[in-house]
Length: 183
Image 1: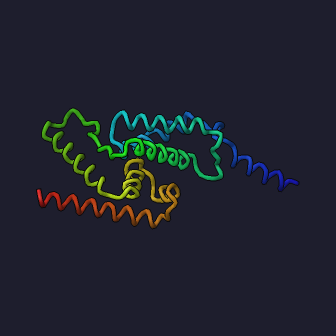
Image 2: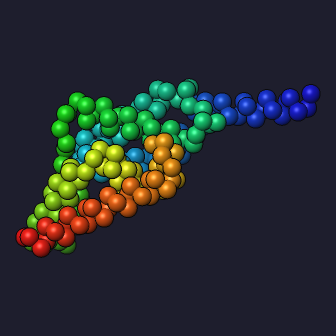
Image 3: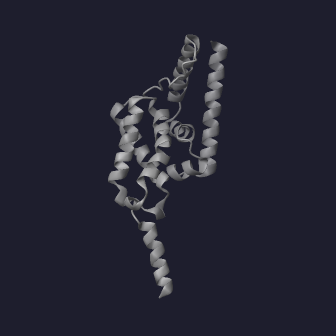
């Protein structure tokens, strides 16, 4: 009987809903990562903020459906964020370019113009990549996830994620360098 009680307590902790989690701590931990994910996908500004807030709103509404045995809270939250991004792009039916990030006051107008030009150029290069590669780059460099976390999130092997990211970065680098030679 003791084994049955232990097993039941383990199952119970796995299926405890997220409503019992410390939402303040989870929000504080995940907010910058989710925002950076969206910032990388849609650019800096109000759209990224709106999508971030929509992600947390959906997570809060669905907190009873979160199960710890199926994945970590961050993985569950990124799945919601990915769905929010897909919905956003479906509504737009067009790619939104990456805008300038917040710049320091110490930058000169020439540096600002060069940085803006670089961001626009990077956005054009990213737009040429397939959606899957853009998404993996967003998760890696925008949200700061590890290859292992990305693999779990998108259903690929860790090795496959690393290979795709390596090839995507190499392709971006080659196109970037080609543009510098031509320009």
